[in-house]
Length: 531
Ligand SMILES: Cc1cc2nc3c(=O)[nH]c(=O)nc-3n(C[C@H](O)[C@H](O)[C@H](O)COP(=O)(O)OP(=O)(O)OC[C@H]3O[C@@H](n4cnc5c(N)ncnc54)[C@H](O)[C@@H]3O)c2cc1C
Image 1 (cartoon, helix red, strand yellow):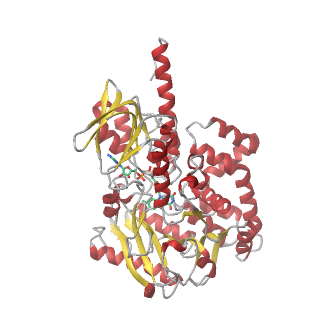
Image 2: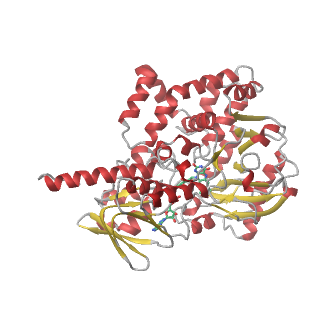
């Protein structure tokens, strides 16, 4: 096989990259190690027939906002988005609940129940989102430095406003909530959303993360593909094939072929060598790509040294359930929300994340949950429910705050920890446990076995903390998809802007590959050096 480009890995980023190249007329093949495409965007009947679960990711506000995905027009390839009446809810055992509704006024009214005036505080925060959120998300998802969207942000805020935004961007979410809200509800929304990444309520940048997800939730909802996450992947694959691109599954790449500092192809684990005339794009995680597939001998010593400091995010345990009935939340709002956050409050989140930082399995896990009956009736038989929850555990377990587990995640330990997860839901929805028909559990090892990018159960291909973002991702100085090897581009979520289903890393890698190829063609015609 002789191609313009090979893309390693059919995660959504790889498929976005391949789509972008194929539409420019490049001959491109995506080679995927697993038997099916999608990476962490897959669905299937893993609990029992008739119940469709999302195996990994599930809610896609980032995809809804992302130019990389929107530009593909996936709706023309079978994708249909569905939105729940409330995007996300944060219910408590006493029936208190904060939630983001589809209308700002409804969200505000829900927050006014916590403290009069908090509704206006939400309106103000969302007004800020309307001014700054669009250019900021655009800047985040474009290649670094984002000159055009950065200029739009500056124009929207002005010089003084830009300085204020700088402070806003590094403010911890606990402090942000204290500055803006008097009651607990606003803090629950901001902090619950911030903790979709491995941040703590007290870490710099967590406020910005919470604000972005809250803004997206208010603007777009937390949409899901009708029929399951796999429909998003199916649409990407169909579009790729319509543009002449190829996809081959069950083909693990074991080597990127490098000649004189340039990537010239790949070798699969069955020994086939595939040469590429223009580029190799790699969705494999940065440490695996550079150490195992490229080889340290081809890389600058400082780069290899920096790579030693690459930090994965926390590990994860995910439970999927098929249920006899929708979850009987005490808080009525939670029955109308597709996404649920389960945590007692900001102090509880600080306590849980401190346990994680100390290497302890949390005694009271914080849950990100999903439920589908009110948003997508195709996912379960009438009257039933498909639901899931994930929570984080340490990558290296040093102990258990609950005093019973070791982190072996054998059958007994996993069952004990799942009981902790279910107890947190039961406190807020008595009767939940009795409605469980079947469950499927992904341990950290199970997640990695299902997708070799989910190292130790890390869901974001590397920490989202500030020391490994933007120009520090995956190593200081890169911040872009180009690598020290000419013709090799990092197209997965260990590149800026990191985890989440937004396709930006894939789109940025494709853009960089095309630009480098144009420079090379030009250099062949003109006597100048080019990468
Ligand atoms: C449990 C879980 C829940 C999540 N929830 C959400 C959510 O609700 N919303 C959201 O936006 N994000 C969520 N995320 C994060 C999001 O799913 C990921 O950040 C995103 O899917 C990563 O996409 P990717 O294409 O970069 O990598 P991946 O999806 O990991 O795909 C990489 C692909 O490359 C393949 N591969 C790796 N090495 C090789 C090789 N050597 N040869 C060939 N193939 C190879 C892998 O098999 C895999 O298919 C979640 C993730 C997990 C795990």
